[in-house]
Length: 178
Image (cartoon, rainbow, N blue to C red; front, side):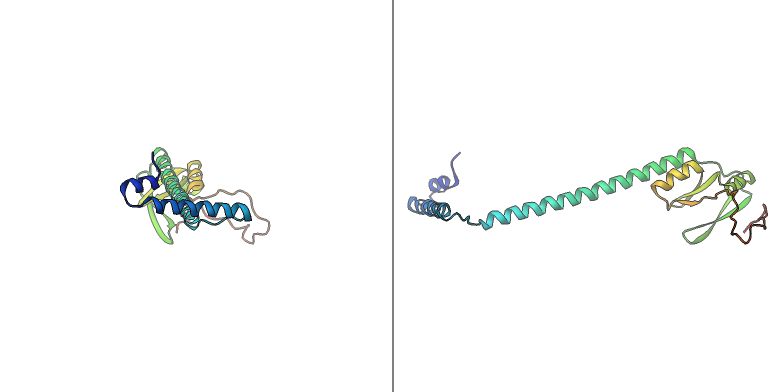
């Protein structure tokens, strides 16, 4: 393929004398560079390299954002799948179980057996949007690893009594409701 200079000559945009002068100037510049040992800076080339570097950096940032969004979407899908596969029945719903979520007191109607499991910490409430589901504690721990804001309440059964606790002698009643 012909050089750009030859293409301009064929098209008649440049005459031979102008092309010859440009080549002579280029050769003189190269000769001066060789003699003095200095390198002239091609500003257009530097600007093009800088633009190319900025574009590559921007592309990397966009890819990182896209990857982060895809990872969040995958985590949300994993959580939804775990909740769907492991949700437990709330029972007949004759006892109101109160819990706090998003600085509000919410109420969930459950059976007596489910209430015992919630109090004992074997079942945990998980909120996804408007849905409130009950899942086993093991599954809730896995969900909390991915997104702790979804796990509402984890009752921990503690048989250890702290020696410094001033209320250690007082027992909480089993039927305490709030």
